[in-house]
Amino acid sequence: MGFRLTGLLPLTFFLAQAIHYWRVGGMGNLLWMCNVGNLLLAVGLLLNHREMIRAAAIWTIPGLGIWIRYVLFEYDFVVSSALAHVGGILVALVVLRRVRMDRTAWIYAFAWYLVMQVVSRLTTDPRLNVNVVDRIQTGWENTFSSYWKFWILMTAVVAFCLWAIGIVLSWIWPMAQTSVCDPS
Image: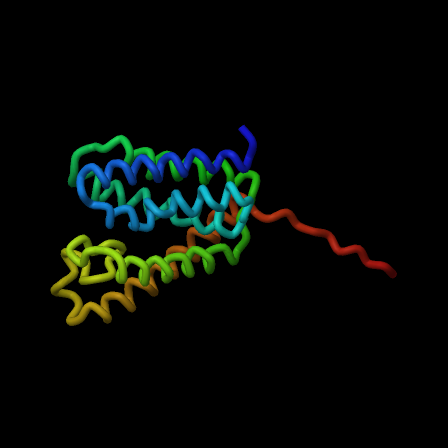
């Protein structure tokens, strides 16, 4: 399969989740970072847009952890959900071998997060709390006196985690060093 056509895999994972959420009546859940990250990865691969690929790849790591903690352990197993999370990270890690990771990729991942915060807040049912944009995450209500204090700290933690993941991935798959010829 051609490199760019690899984008059909995460696109399929995203569409499988879309069908699942359409059937169960929860289309707003499609905008969780881990789900929509498959769409970003698919578009990045199909367009050969390295920054999109890297941003999506970075997000697959916390997405998998959050999915395991809050979905896999608390709800029934859903095949489309496993494809979106496990399949998405596998595709991302395989394509990073070719795309490589630069140390600024986390900035694109963070920008994507901020965009999805706005989109989620404007388009999803507040009861779903997609991407934790409407209220304090359950279990943290006694720690924070207001949602905005929670959001500011969460956003700082997200930025730090994306930076750290980007650094680790750039150690594993560093950008090729270019040599500068000295004309003297």
